[in-house]
Amino acid sequence: DAGVTQSPTHLIKTRGQQVTLRCSPISGHKSVSWYQQVLGQGPQFIFQYYEKEERGRGNFPDRFSARQFPNYSSELNVNALLLGDSALYLCASRTLAELTDTQYFGPGTRLTVL
Amino acid sequence: AQSVTQPDIHITVSEGASLELRCNYSYGATPYLFWYVQSPGQGLQLLLKYFSGDTLVQGIKGFEAEFKRSQSSFNLRKPSVHWSDAAEYFCAVGAGDNQGGKLIFGQGTELSVKP
Image (cartoon, rainbow over all chains, first blue to last red; front, top):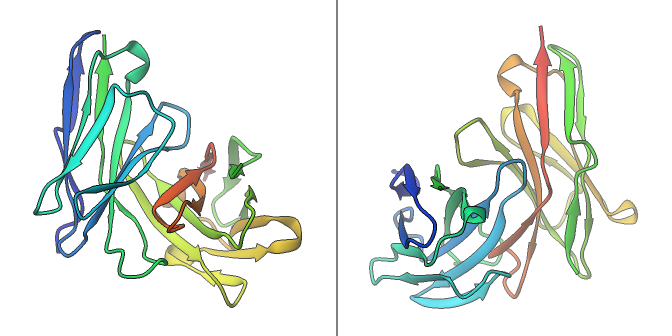
């Protein structure tokens, strides 16, 4: 089975622009979470979506938004990009059949803001 | 507030030597604990997880971790390191309403393996 897929792999934007990152979960997984990983740090939780509803949000500004589609894929949008938004953005999926389900991570999208 | 601390930013071990990576957590309830590994330019791969039961957890690639509630620790161990183990290792605690949905990660420990 295919793992979590993310697109694009790399992205270069300039300050003030907007970006959309995409994630396809593992087949059968209904929950998607997004994380931001700045160079040299651990990932930080941005959002969790389940059944198209936001189920959790981390400490990120309103410039960050996301949505989940009926096929459980997800998009992360970031508006008015800042230099500090440069990071690896990771998507993770899980079934949520049980609380102990494992999150499986995709390879990430590397965003560079110039 | 929930938090995870990995005291060692960078560790170097010789190939064949034993390894222990430290992880301390702060969490009010019974924690869900995880160790992930990240190779350069890659996403995160789960090594092992602890939810309940036996406090010694076996994972993939010969790794194990021991949950010690009294010390709020979840240290990762491997008896004999291979050169391919060189990577970044992250400890995480599951938080939020469903515990597994929101992971709080430590800063990571970079492992170098010398021949």
